[in-house]
Length: 324
Length: 306
Image 1 (cartoon, chains in turn cyan, purple):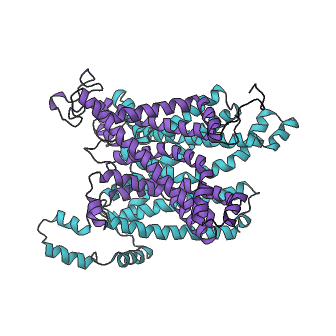
Image 2 (cartoon, chains in turn blue, cyan; image 1 turned 120 degrees about the vertical axis):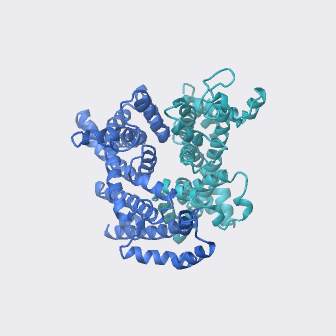
Image 3 (tube, rainbow over the protein chains, first blue to last red; image 1 turned 90 degrees about the vertical axis):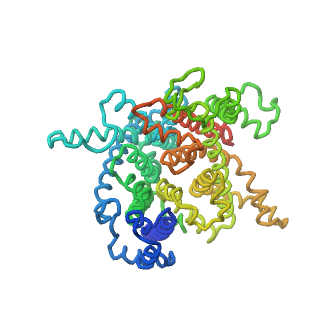
């Protein structure tokens, strides 16, 4: 296990290092460079000035050299300044990360709370009309474009009914007393969108895992020795079915993050997703680099967690033997 | 089955699969819908001709016109006909979905075959690559890829200034991240197939590695590849639409279901109905591809009962 974990950790670090180079390189290929931005801010700059500035800041040097310079400053803990926010990059990422974790955490828990019973129920009643209905709804959840769902929810609750705000995080100038209630109102629609968008695949995972588990011999044994149906389902089947579910859901973390990017952008919610999108679109190179690497680290950690959880939940799995 | 097995006509695998598929009502209906929507989108120029209109023709006197005999689904913020623009958007979205799925599946099949058949360090490297691509934050990566300036990329001018470059680009970037599912699937199946006697027989006859992979192993993998590819089309259409929605995929004036929704967001307070049609088109098409894939999966499963 230790050997396997070490290998996985090493692999994740290699991926991270490669990704940082690829992203650095791709950012360099985006329209506009820092000097173009200076020119647009100060029209008096002549082409000669621009060339001199490019040389001064080293933008004319080869990509690998520039990358290594960035890497050495970044590894000494200096991630630079964000152009859009006029703050050190880490000061911008901190609050955004907190907002995204709130958003993703709540919708993730809500989605699981709804998907678990639905998936278990569908599995027990496999091939009945109720199973088909649950499947249909789950497929609808998987297939609905989340940005469109967000637009529909805004149309219904903000435009037609006018009960919930369409975007932002708080009413400007709201008093301290209504603070929490006010912030909660801004979270309802983003959370609803993310929950609906992930509940379909969660239900399908639970259902598939339960169906597979219910076919096992030990379930028949449990029934034969007279265990109640509730006990068979919840004790014997569910605990085993949860193993693949935990793994798939942890592996799905990248997907969840993509959902957050869409939802945060539409609802103007200042989380990591919107931060990355705005940084890429606004030529905020320093911020985009670090925010992107943060997102990559989070996804890699999710995958690592899935592996560890798999071995921990299921003692039958011996990593070192499988891996050889 | 009521009749005895002995009395039954022998049937090919494909005929059996076909019969199982026809029993899957939802998948069948989805297949019909998809054929219909493809035909309808393809006939967009026909509608233009018959009704003597131009989908890109602005008509500022009829902005936000409600549905009428002239404009079946009303008009948008420039007075353009929503119905025909929706059909043109469908052409692009469906084409991107189908072509990208095929490109990604081809790419994934080749990688999976090589990894599974060669084994050893080739397999190790290719599979670590696959794992790595899967573990990346997909959407931010696609956004960066969609945002880069092709003039700086060192590609030949002919490609950079090609007429439908935003179309090719989206096919390419989605395929670059979309091949992993098929690659894993094909690699897993190849690992077990290469140990089978018919592969050994081919080897003994002196068949080249390429011939064994393409003639002996690949045909056995067609069903799972078809299922995975069908299931991926829905996802690809969703990705295309979200990128276009964010202004990074298909660029106006070329319409796609995604970029038709971009304007709709800005107009959500003045003309909320404009957001409805492209969204429902994406939704139903994606769900249809998912049902179709699900039905194919059941039909092509060799373990299923007849």
